[in-house]
Length: 278
Image (cartoon, rainbow, N blue to C red):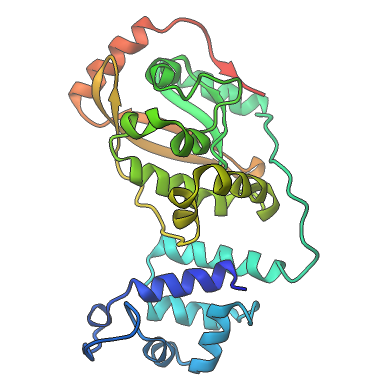
């Protein structure tokens, strides 16, 4: 049985071409990407040790080994942050299996006050599981027609993978799906996301499991929406971590003049105040 760390190292090795690391292409290989012996040599570890890490038989590699593998694979900053996190939770899996529990849904009063200051802009408080915990009226105006807000407890992950409307609303649905699947690994703790990953694997199938298991670090570029009333929208996202609560304050900014004008029209039509969902 593998581990999140081993799966990520193996996936990164499989997606890395030898020439990208200055190695000669040795011709046909039994598996895609970089050979295990090449990565082991670059990282200064034995092939047998790398095999143990990838297969989950060594769950506690040293910081030096993890850094050496990150260097050898030319990981960027986001990938290095992810591999450090996976190292932490992989080692923790040796202890008693944690009880799956959902994370807290309460939003602190000071965070809600900050959100109010962003009116009439588009903003929301979310967690890594995709729960939309509080939002501005402009967020309602943009997302109301998408179907995301139809239920009492809107969740971006469930919406992206189980609501057919999401594949039209998100112009780059595959990238959004990658983001939501990746963020489940970044929940406040592994037990916070385990229950949702099990549920999504059952209801969404390979669309979900193939993404959550390959640990692709998303680019988080401009969010492009196909709004039923406003047409094409392009939004830049600024994500501010509320680290103590395992939440994020996400602010959506128009990426072009056409989007700014469309959002302004939608905001003028919006009624009601900030809504906090608990």
